[in-house]
Every structure is written in structure tokens, then in C-alpha cells.
Image: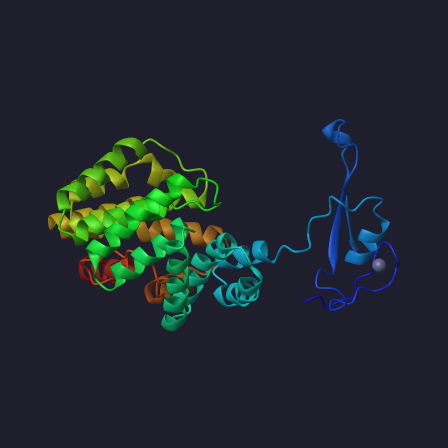
Length: 338
Ligand SMILES: [Zn+2]
């Protein structure tokens, strides 16, 4: 990755990237850290990991080695499933305690799901369920079992596993994972699958009552609107779609989506002219955003239209057969934009 030679600030030699798996390291010094901000000067250096370790009087606080699980989780979150699974495959055999294995297994199943390896998913899920039956229950494994049952249209079984997952989560609050949004999505999807449409509608209404005025503070938080959005689409409830569109939640986090959702709502009502206008506005705002970032909008748009979404658990079927909204938008612009 590094094209020019990088010199170690401690020994003065060049840093060979392959000498140590952590090399090259980047060190930063900030002066006067307890003083006035104006006096705090930052400067950065490169160093060999071993050199840095060598000059520390006490390296007991140095906490970088043996962090493969942390790196694997980073890869998983970043969607680099191949890199993640390579690390997990090394970690699983050395996780001696069943609890340690139960910690890794759901993440591995997620990786194999995205990598489309059904046999490995099945094998690891069975392993996890076996550990559950021996008393090492895991919210993550039950969740994966539910997702697997849902994918094979066994909705009642999926529901039972979701209940077990919630129970396991309650019993063991510090297993490090948080399945709140996953469980929420799962329950919503299951209500639809089990024809409990009014219950699903009620959950969406309650979510809106609680969240319309809320302004999300992270990308993670904005994701909680996705299952609600999908559920409203499924129910073809124009009223709820409008509420979602006009919420502070949507307006503040993804301003263009306000108009995409309004377009969808008008389309549900059969107001094609109004839908067209909203879709046009959606595309205009999105173009503005993308071009402000200095990116090519046409390329970005084309990618949105052709992107295959990641494999998702508890997928709520789309009345438009999962045609990307951007394709609908262009159809409306084509048809009504004279
Ligand atoms: Zn050095």
C-alpha cells in the first residue's frame, strides 16, 4: 500500500511492511494536553511496532496484540465478509469455552449468509443450537435459527425462536451484542407473514408517534426506519408513508427520502401526477447532494438502479417485486415529464 519508504522515528531504519503484522505504525503526539487548547500542538510520526514497544517503560497498557476478534468484527461491520470469515475460521477452533464459540458463531453465520455458503451456515447453526441445548444459550444463535426458519417460510418456528432469543437476551445482558433492531425487524416481518396486518400497522404507528420528532445522531440510528418503511410499503398505507416522509427523523437524516416517500405515498393513492412531481424533487435533491460531494451523479444513480441489496434477514416482500425505487422514479419521469 505504501509507495514511498517510511522511516521509523525511533531506530531510523526504513519500515518494511511485512516485518511485523502491525507495521507501519502511526504515532501522534499532542503537546500541553492539560493546558490551553491554543498551546496544544499535534505532530505525527511513523515507527516500527516493536521499536515503540521497546522504548515503553511499561507496556502493560499496550493492548493491540490478540485483538483478532476485534478486527474480524470490524471487517464484518464494514461488509468485508471474506476477510472477516478468514479470521473467524482461525478463532473458532481456539475458542475453548462454549460461551466464546457462541460469541463468534452468529457472526460467522452472517458472513456465510452474505457469501452465499448455505452448507457452512447450516453446519454452524447446528453447532450453535447444539451448544444451546447443552445450556449455553445464545440470543444470537436463536436469532439466526429464526432467520433461517423465516427464509424457509416456517413462520411459526421463526416466531418461537425469536421468543427464545429475547429470553436469552434478558437472561444474559452482557453478551456484548445488541439485537434490539434485529428483533424489532423480525417481529414486524413475522406479523406480516402471519397475516397480522393490523398489529403490524399498529407497531408502525407507535414507532411514528415516538420517532417523528426525533433527530437521529448516527447512521446506525437512521437504520431503524428501514423496517418501518418496508412494512408501510407492504401495507400500501399512504397515510403512514406521508407521516414518515414528513418526520424530522427522515428530513434531518436523508432529506431526499422525504420526497421519495411522498412519491410512493401518492402512487399508492393513484395520484400519478403528484407522484411524478415528488419523484422529480427526490432526484433533484439527491443530485444536488451527490454533486456537492464532488461525485458523478449519473454514475451514482445508475449504481442505485442496478445495486443488488445485501442478503437481509426477515426481508419484507415488496409489492413492486423489489424493483429499486430509482427505477420507478425514472419510469415516472419518462412517462409524465413532458
Ligand atoms: Zn524502528
